[in-house]
Length: 360
Image 1 (cartoon, rainbow, N blue to C red):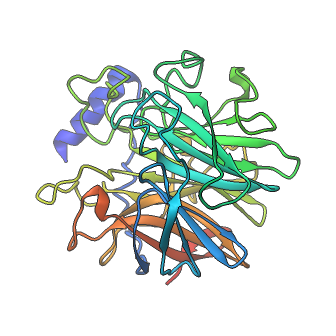
Image 2 (spheres, one colour; image 1 turned 120 degrees about the vertical axis):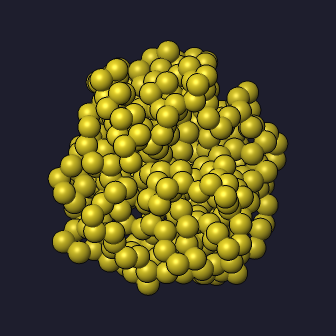
């Protein structure tokens, strides 16, 4: 522990970071229920329900689409969102990351990420369709981008990583894009009425919603703020916003998720976990159960490693009837920890004094 504390103190002086208790080292480790298994391999899932059919979109060639009669499955692949590579000339255009699908009126929107792991020369794109299944999606290209390209020199794109999109549309039709990964954390910007572009480039319209001031480990020796943060990895990403009974909930994944080695897993508590803060406003500020702002490293852990579940994250929340359901990907270390080994799991949520609790 001493070397890590020394490292934290060093960076707090050089980069002006605050010193606080690392949230993974909480004195009372919560107990989590087992996942509801689906036997479905997935990474960065997003799920919607249309009538009696559940649609799962996840990382895969041109973004895979699966359907099932229930959250538990069985899930059947029915195609992909796109018929070709993303029109955005960045990252892995053939396998976009972290799709997020919403329905607005009679139009379905699939927001997606293109990037290269460890670098923030990234973009969030969007495709639209009149139906949730394959065959009718039109790719509209860049919504926002960082690293290079138009407006990438503007705040917050000049210091953020534009991946992991989540979009919520208010009752008056205003859409907000929440995004971010590592570097400076989670941001939010308003969108145009068609949800295809930012509504404004003014800094006053940007909200910085979540950040972890404490780096999880030492920076890469070659980190240059485009590929690698010179202050170290600030492990917060995968934002998702849900709403329940007067509160907006900002969910995020904290810790390490990928490129894991079976013989050198992260120290216990530094792997992925699912955390949340809440606010009475979609625009924040968001605080956790202790009252700590998510910008100050706050975040209440709702679901973490337990039993056969390791490093759950990449989460979303589906309102299914009168119940909120938390879904996510996770690893089972007895099966494998490769990217392709990730499985889809879920748990219904109960709310205790306005705070979500994962149920068996």
